[in-house]
Amino acid sequence: MTNITDLPNHKKLILFDGVCNLCNTSVQYVIKHDQNNIFMFAALQSDAGLQVIKKQQIDTIKIDSILLYTPGRGIDYKSTAALKIAYYLGFPQNLLTVFFIIPTFIRNWVYDYIAKNRYKWYGKKKSCWIPTPELRSKFLD
Image (cartoon, rainbow, N blue to C red; front, side, top):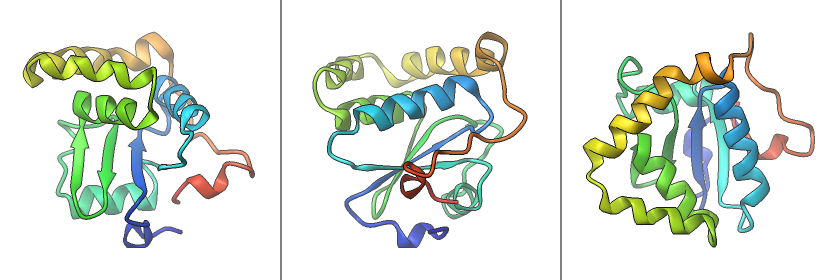
């Protein structure tokens, strides 16, 4: 599946920086804890990622890490995306949604600080992570 219009309405698409070690580790964490099989994944650098970026008119200079795309609803980004992902993972990860009480500009400042330093702190791959054959169905190309 390479077209985001093929994404079922009950699924949510996590777009991530495919060369970022922190992002790849986070995706693997979500896969492991996604008990209700809600999430699908695409690297921002993939065809599906580029489709969403174009369709939603996302400025990749300002937003270059995690995005949460929900069919019929659109995009959540930065700290809001991360907290919504935690919410959908269920207990105990959903407890992180308590951070929604913090104003968005403060949450996004912290998020941006981590995102800005993610390659320095966690490293970077030369190419996007390739999922195992067992996980392939969870990824859009």
